[in-house]
Image: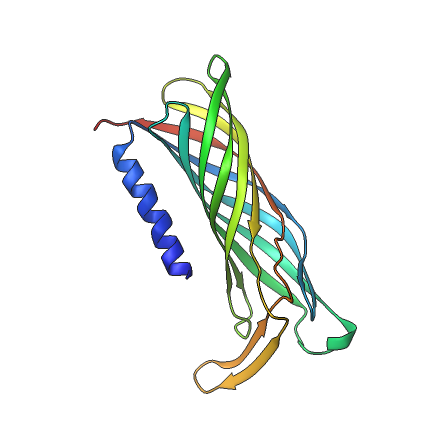
Length: 216
């Protein structure tokens, strides 16, 4: 599922990029505010340390519309708080975790002052929770959301951008915990939520816009 999603996002990006008359590439740095990941076995508190990535923006057939592709990674610290009914189920309580975002947005932007733009629009993509402990599987999740922000262009090549993404990974499960041992991978642990949940992630970041005019 995750490979299909990444492939679809990449194909969409490159197809649109080939048609683009002006591409904006924005290296970005920022911070992510998020709520806890809740399971029937307990909850995982995730605290952001640093987020960095890049945004790729290119025109659509609508003069005011643009496609944005976000690739970002958060370095986080996760702390596991177990439920009393599942005490000592998982021995390790603290994790280093990378959270990677692949998000495609369609935004409408409006010039509210010369060279100043406001934009907003919906998004969809994939969020992958990569936990440092080998016995805990990665958790890729489909995500929906929206983004908004402002741009200021200094000239036809440079600008700055302040951006906010709201990203909602979709967690679906039956409320099970599985722990098994195999010869190939050793001990494996799986956690599933007992219902569909949408943990909220707010990505706040700023970056320098690099503009590259192109032709057909």
